[in-house]
Image (cartoon, rainbow, N blue to C red):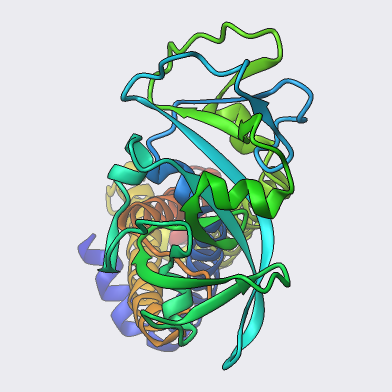
Length: 352
């Protein structure tokens, strides 16, 4: 480690360029990871906030909550405190002073756990059919308590009485109201009670032949674009890790070839090969660690500077995973020149 520090300090420009290249790749990995996590969160935020373990839908709904309809006959006579009826439908919200925007209406019952556990950041929960609680995202867009909304071109107005935390689904803000309003927006009769049942129990059983229970993972993978989006970001991040490995390996291989005469002298002096290998690995570890920490600092500043509209979510788990990934790639890359070091002939130092 001492020799590695000494050489890096002596050859500042050479190693500075290597650090800069690794820094750029690390920063890009952190950016893509933050965007991937942020977009995934906007798809699933509310689902996780509901502590979902199972989703019960009409079996002909193609595992889509917004396309599912369940009737009174399909619902168990008495749901436990761990289940809640949910109605979902996409809509367009309008306000005289604000731009028209898309959202998802979620109808819930005030005596069930989703309503009771709703995390309100400002205001209160809706108490009647002309009141709604909306996503915090709308507050960031200029909406405030008391604003009136019209939904899907209807003349009916709904008053914003609260803003909710973690209220995003299908990359759209949620408008929470009651199931009666949902039925009206969905244009269904009173026989239809909801889109589905959300359960906090993984062992919830379905008794109706018209319904089917889905595990959380199955339901999430069927969300529009969710799996494709995660796969795309995962492939990009994976390729960046491979590129970082190649860069470290190429630079260290070239440097090792240039230093072979020096290694021969050191071998002639009795320094074992494992010391020289340790020197190369330590050098790579220092370069990658320094570059990744610089990228991490810049990433934190980037997150602070970005507007709230950008779906960036950077967590300690992403930072640790990215840092460990880069260090592992750096160590693997540093092992590629090892064969050349092991083949160094001490007689080179004495012209043999």
